[in-house]
Figure (cartoon, rainbow, N blue to C red):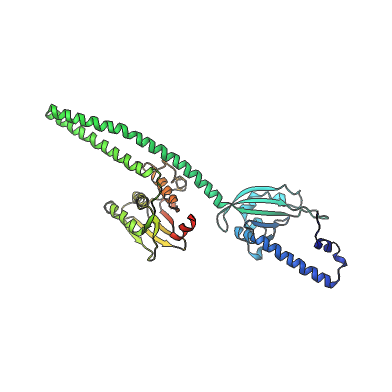
Length: 389
């Protein structure tokens, strides 16, 4: 191993006079400051813990990831500060009564000071000569939250796309027999008119009209279904979200009135326009308002609240409906999952897809019998511009 000049000086420190000791202290201080500067520029967290798990050093990244304060250094045990981390590490590996464990690497989910997924890499420090206990651990913590979320979203998007393609194919195939039925029903209608049967012919004609009406209804369902599920890139234009939701509410006004439901729209006076696809976002609003209506009894209330911060515009749909249980909540965005008797289970999946294609997110909070809050998060135009560069 190559020795520096400082190593040589430290090797004969007992021979140094007061002047040289002062120089050595200054040099050590400079080297310490330089090392701290280097460690604090590293985005990964770096911790040093002793054999009892007490944090002896933490760079700025580590302090931010696990919520350490400067007053915690040298005092706080890692296990007390971050229970999630402690549960992942066999505490016997840092006990002075046992041998130091080998290098450890694993992924850990942290809940404090905020929810994160981190990759933990632990390297034991060699036991000091003359001591029975180990020297503790150096721990490198890498925040992989975005990496994990991005991967999960990618998998979900691929799964959703395959389901949508399958559903669109099935719907398209149904169109062929419906066209055939339409043609044959028209032929039967003409034949009945030629036969001119009186009472019996009238009954057959009425039945025929029912069949034709049902075929037209099925054709309409398939047409709207294909429009809804075919993945289409949004055509982005400047949109006022409040104007857009007002358009949708006007369409649903009669049904809201019939159900005796109140709607209150609370608008941020300085809400900026966003870039979005008018048709797709109207579909999002229609689905969310329809779901809220069907979840509420007469006298229920739907609040639509808008707000903004520096980067995003938010629109919340808050209802006083039946809510969603914790078990059902995790399945809301799954294809074909529905709690409605006549629901197809694609609405919320399509809403989520549209929001993702707009660079936004949908956040769902609900409690059984207490109501549901759905938050739509849209990127402001300047943020979208930065993302596209």
